[in-house]
Image 1: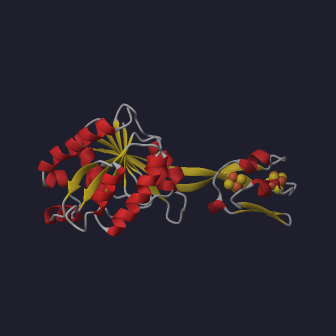
Image 2: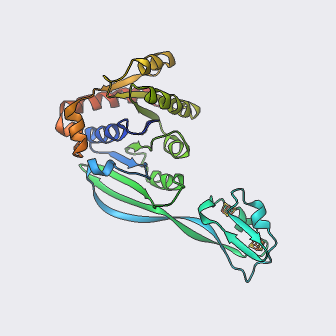
Image 3: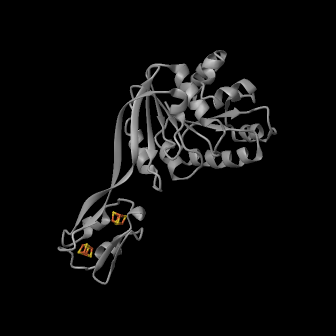
Length: 279
Ligand code: SF4
Ligand code: SF4
């Protein structure tokens, strides 16, 4: 089973939920930190990293000796990443989506595939958990290809927990796609509710069963619960605002280590997910 832990709003406690769920379940679990712009699950899981891989995406490389400056590459590119100006082929690598259109259409075979570095993937283990995360190169704007690469290590023989980035745009969709369940972590505030609605919309478009965890549940108002009730969204867990929990988080400690009674609650959360997830 693949569980994608997401949140519309940042800072709702998504990583706390993903890491503590993984640690409570122990072996036969993979934790994939797909928040590649700002991965932080490793700070809590403390894996020993055993492998590192640099990830590249293909971008065009033009051999101007073969080029006839016909302009066909520029015409086909939907992203304005390649242009032919006076007998020059200009390439804007950061705009390239690696669709391959230009090297397919080039009549002279003048375009080959080069590589643009996206970032790195690191793999390791901690307490029986297989841990993988991606780190986007500073300045790189396109995270979905790196997220896909992290997800290419999903192992269907294990339970896979994905820590998704905040928001509701392409990187989050890349983390929800093909998941069996989306666990949305929210907080009972107006901002939490606004972003939750967007995240629910995204999961519903993908037709994935979902449930909520309300963090800092004794803050704010009751509108998130009312919304969940109206929409028929199950609230699977509530985590109160608690000084001990906040201090543990700030020290990079796991909630289930500091307050072991929470382990049973995370196991209960998983039991509920099993019943609600795609068969
Ligand atoms: S399609 Fe090929 S030959 Fe034509 S301008 Fe582009 S690189 Fe040159
Ligand atoms: S690979 Fe696609 S996006 Fe990139 S330059 Fe070629 S046509 Fe444009």
